[in-house]
Amino acid sequence: VTYPWDLIAWNVEALDHDLAGDRLERRGDVHRLAALENANAIEVAAGARVEAFAVLDARGGPIAVRAGARIAAHTLVEGPCVVGERSELLGGRIARSTIGPECRIAGEVEDSVWQGYANKRHHGFIGHSAISEWVNLGALTTTSDLKNNYSGVRAWIGDAEIETGQTKLGSLIGAHVKTGIGTLLPTGASVG
Picture (cartoon, rainbow, N blue to C red):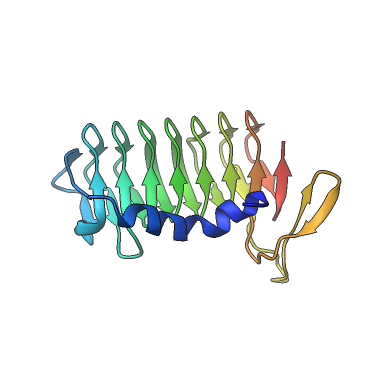
């Protein structure tokens, strides 16, 4: 890994690789009204809970819900995806992402890496982003992950703007960042 966007670009492949060797079992509490698509590729660890009307769709890759995690009603999880220990997904669509421990996430999230203890409890879109520990994203915080001219994304690293080689890159958000309600982050934003 040379740049932060490498974590995002390689996340799906890493999830597929890491979860391929896991013995996927369902020891946690999966409500009978929850839907599991491609159930053989879904693990719900002991102490985890999947509520009624949640959908776990592993047709695109495996899903692992770690111990103590909760998938609330009206949440769609699309694999590959890992939901960290004691994290809560509180409604919306979470796709192809790594969610660290103790996160609280709602709304739309795709192709993103969340370290632990981050919070996004409200609507808004976070895509192709790296979110560090202890981040709190205010209600309706939204990232842009695609430029309107579809050209490559540049990002600031130190004092230099660098071509990332990516056509999709949301935000790189550092530890302890807090955003206010309705914050809009442009494509390739770096927030320290």
